[in-house]
Amino acid sequence: MSKRTSRRPRSGQVSQQQARMNQLITVAVVVAVIAMAGCYMLTGFDPLGLFSGGGGGGQPTPVAVGSGGDWWQVYFTDPTSVNDPDNPRGSIEEQLIARIEDARQTIHIASFEFNLTPVADALIAAQRRGVDVEWVTDDEHGIEADEEEGHGQFAMLEQAGVPVRDDGREGLMHNKFWLFDGQTVWTGSTNITVNGIFHNNNNVIVIESPALATIYEREFDEMWAGEFGPTSPSTVDEQQLTLDGTAIQVLFAPEDDVADHLIPLIEGAQSSIRFMAFSFTHDGLGEAVLARAQAGVDVEGIFETRGSETEYSELGRLFCAGVPVRQDGNPRTFHHKVFIIDG
Image 1: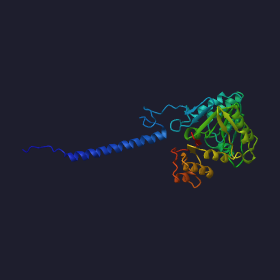
Image 2: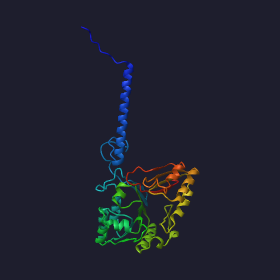
Image 3: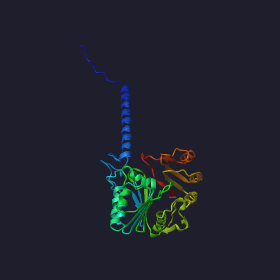
Image 4: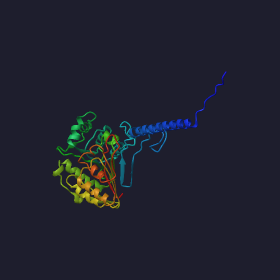
């Protein structure tokens, strides 16, 4: 009987098999990481804490994304983790409702779109306790859109006795400001809608200042009286103030020729320019940004992807000149309208 002997693989075969195994493991790990990254970008779920900086199991606890001082506060939407209208904890909606509930005399609103029922309920409650609530909106995107599915909040307000007026013209009433008790200004890029607060990238700045509120109240009164666009008088020379050593200038479009005031600010940049833009199509502003970049100023910018590749966008001009600009990564909308100069 012959003796059976086992054949051991040669060392070269072992090395090749091990190398193939290592490659398979590496590919599997990369695929897993990409999958988890995609999950985190879409849902905020990060079980291993690889992307959110934390570990462990489930959705991160929502907190208000903001910072501020004695007289100002800034908030940002957080579409990755605060994205459920049925669970608004930590959202801008929660912050807004708290201010509505604190109001005692007046709430004057100039806001483009609206479809958040909890905010409508809070305004109706304020009106019933004696607060003077008034709202100016856009005719097409405000009043006419109120008849669409998921809307109807303006009808709720009017049925409860809250007066709502629209601009009644082809141009947009595109403001997004709220005035509380003649002393607090709430403004920024945020439309008071499900998308605006829970899905899009947006910001809000809140400033406590009766002097600033007076400037905005004057603009509100003009619109309440039906003065929009070319019929709205400019009071730009009366729209400057200083708070705690910080100079503030308020500009309203179109009557204040806003670009003519912004371009010199950009031209005066000495060290850095950062911008976040839903839409950036103004050639004069684009030329000013490019000139500062070519002069050595550190420029970086983010564009909303939709529309940024058209011939009208400043993205192509800046990118082709070597300025580090990019498109956003939100599958919904990057809605910011912010320039930070020498920050």
